[in-house]
Each structure stands twice: as structure tokens, then as C-alpha cells.
Image 1 (cartoon, rainbow, N blue to C red):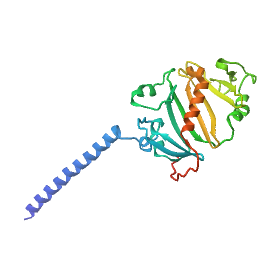
Image 2: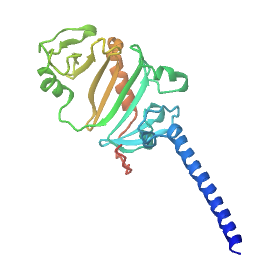
Image 3: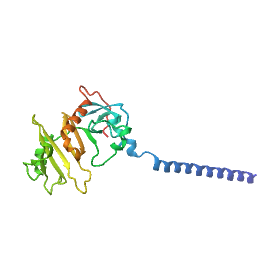
Image 4: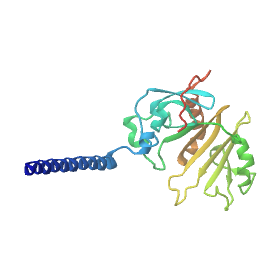
Length: 250
């Protein structure tokens, strides 16, 4: 009798071993497949750039202001969750500032020096300086000549000191009739900067900063770009109480 039970025990042990091997193999296979083909933590959190062709509205607040932005202007999936945010990264195609679409995918993904993609960001204003204050208190300490010189496209040009942290950039300004100072920083066309860009940071609303950048080749149309991006950003704005309680600081 003991022989029969011994045979049964051996058979059951064999089946358990085979079953365990199969389970472990499946787990390892799933793990390998997930490692190579599954979403990363960054992708799960929505921190990896991913274009969207959807025009669905995204309701969010930045600073103390409410915005409703079509999804196809957003660069990161996390922004499409809406809610209260510190900032939101956006992009559009110049000159009309069109949103992403499948037909323009290659253009939006290009990093060539003549790429017509304008990147812009809405961000909660935390100070301490406004655009003109940053120019006067920070940038003016870094330039070679505080008087500047006539630059291209109606701008005044400033060269940064060789030892400055801005030495690979040039500074351009323009004083509007109403006194507003336009401050544009552009990377120089250098061997290590083969696709230079220009940027401006300005206060769009009392608690919101608008930052935008574009390839330096488009500096000649700086005024048109500035007018168009302000108009677009303000078109997303919804005056009145924010009324959004969801909080997502990522």
C-alpha cells in the first residue's frame, strides 16, 4: 500500500513542479514583454511628450485664472487631466498658430533651424521680477554696453560679457509706445548650437506668465509672433471665478 501512496505523491509533486515552472515562465515572459513594450513610469504619469489630434476642451486653472484649451495644443498627456496646475506646456504651428494634426506630424516633430513650431507655456507667476525688472536688475549687469546698439528688425541689440552665463546668447529689446519693454533673448548661431532659438517671458495676466520660443530664423517676424501668441493665449482665458477644485501639481 505504501508503494501506491508513494507513486501518487511523486505524481502530484511532478505536476506541482511542472505547474510552478509554467507559472514562473509566464510571469517572466510578461515581465520581459512589459519591460520592452509596456509604458514607462513617465508615460503613466503623463510626463512624456505625446501629441493629440483631439480638439476636446481641457478645463484648467493657472495662478488665479481659468483657461479652456483644446487638447491638440497640449504637449504632455498630464495637462489633459485639467484641474489646478502650476504650468502647462503648449505648441502651435506658425504663422497662423495652428494646433497639432496628423497631417503636420513630421513638421511638429522637426528640430531643424527653420522649424515653424512655436513652443509656449502658461505658468503661475511667482516673481520676483517682471520682464522689465529682470532686464534692468539682472540682464543689464551681464552686458558689455548698457546703451546697446541698433540691431535688426527695429530692435536694440546687446552683447553679453564673455564671462557671463549668457555669453552664448544675444539680447534684443524694443520699447513700445505705451512704455512696455519687449525683451528677447536669442542663442547665437554657434557650432554647439546648430538650431538656435529665441524666447520671451512676459506677464500675460496678473498671476500668469506667458513664455514662448521659436527658431531664430523667425526673429524678423518677432512683432507678428508676439501679437499672435498673445491673442491665442488670451483666447483660452475664461474671466471670472476659477471654480476648479481638482489639484494636480505635476
